[in-house]
Image 1 (cartoon, rainbow, N blue to C red):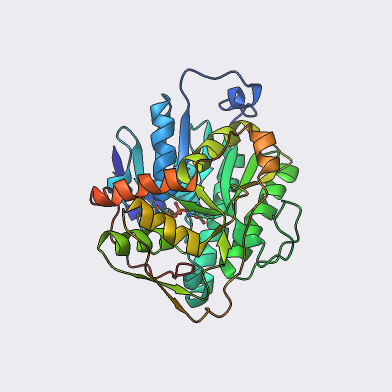
Image 2 (spheres, rainbow, N blue to C red):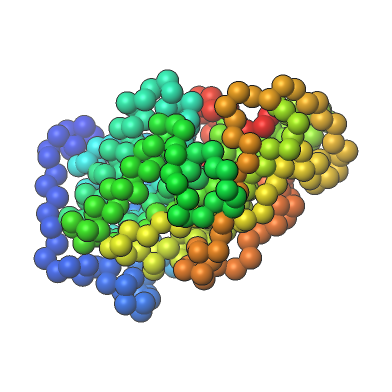
Length: 358
Ligand SMILES: NC(=O)c1ccc[n+]([C@@H]2O[C@H](COP(=O)([O-])OP(=O)(O)OC[C@H]3O[C@@H](n4cnc5c(N)ncnc54)[C@H](O)[C@@H]3O)[C@@H](O)[C@H]2O)c1
């Protein structure tokens, strides 16, 4: 079901009225008594992570409404049966109308590009922070709990690894600063307005339907492409830089569990594996999955690149009751299978984010 709202509709100043009973619609989410069927608003539901989340929600019998401007997401990713509102999360009237009648919201829409933030600081801020405030504002008016995507980018370059949630926050990009801003405004939503939230700081998520230009794990798609086509790969530096690669199904599990853990204390949790993977090991594993031996060229290191990023998963595992995360090789096998199937669902975008290490 697709609704494209005309501009005149937006101009009609859709009044966002406060619901009379606090959390009347969403109370089952807090009481722990599962409803037969809930309706969730997923912003960014046509994107990489959002499309996997929507599939999981629909798969367990819930209803899904997606708000997405299709800027990096694709309509081909829309899960069958979901309602799609093509609109901008930066438009408060659109967000407020999209929030109507939902039991919970997962806010994933963002311009997930550090490089875009350098080129268009204010434009990305409008989506990444103002858009998030629009979501929180509509949620408090509609009495809806919100789980939102934060990012490991809020930590910047840390000396002490693994990075626990309590580590100092030193974002090195406008993107990271805006994600930190989301966490601060979620706190305001809880303290001032009584709106339950939960922030999840994703590390490097990977899986099928990820854009190869993703700054997080696009390197995986690049390696898969090169090795599948019989080519070599280039790595900036010595290949010993490490990342915490978390498979998308583990992120979805955290988001689903998070819908029950949202609270007015605005908790924030890492979503990571706690396993450091070097870019060199990643290339070798991708090559093995593609049935090739790895031929790697090493270039000069890239200026400003973070050397190591590793999350501490203990707190989120305890709070959300998560199991062991998917192994790297197992996850890569799914990505390679998706690439070999012709990347179903991925739209070519004009993004130009630089992936790490390659
Ligand atoms: N992928 C990762 O490794 C990773 C890591 C940390 C945080 N995150 C965060 O997770 C979330 C999802 O990321 P993803 O990797 O799925 O990215 P993605 O680009 O695939 O998904 C983002 C979605 O938001 C939509 N969108 C962008 N601007 C919009 C706007 N103004 N209005 C409405 N929709 C808009 C896009 O069309 C897309 O469908 C983002 O908030 C991102 O910052 C991702």
